[in-house]
Image 1: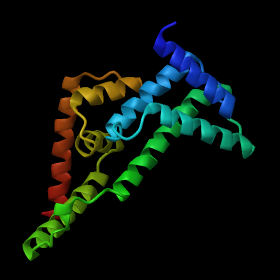
Image 2: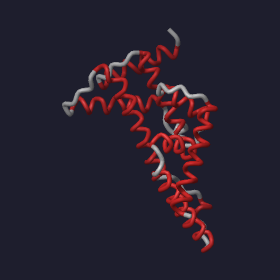
Image 3: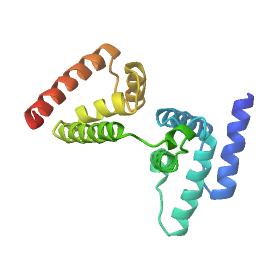
Image 4: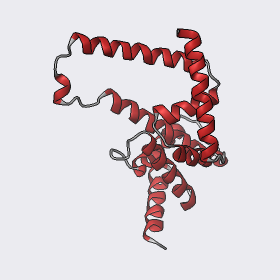
Length: 191
């Protein structure tokens, strides 16, 4: 038994003892890797560890059971993945809300800087409106590439985890078409 294997077993035992959440070593390894990937996507890996997410998943599992709800055994892994993803999203929103403002950001903005900021915000809103006109798949691809900042390689890995094997070249081409569609909608609506 390796160190990682015994560590996973210890975590699995703790989750079972504290929260009644029974996971196999493989389940635990898959969840940990899944949460690690999502923490990277949200740029939270320097602040949180997958084990913290697993612990919160266990706590929410216990709360779910205390409320009289049940999670069927075959769906436990999916429930844990989904709950962990939601926890990470909550943490991301919290981090963005309470972001520390650096000293140089306290400087008073000039009228020109304010005007540019307003224009940038309006432009962002127009792009967002145009994005809503695209298909859900196209929106998702553009958001994950440009808003979350993932590379095409990272997107291919992300999709592979969801069971969709798409080559990087195919993703690039889809991205190119998605940008062109967005441009068409944007120019049609706003210019």
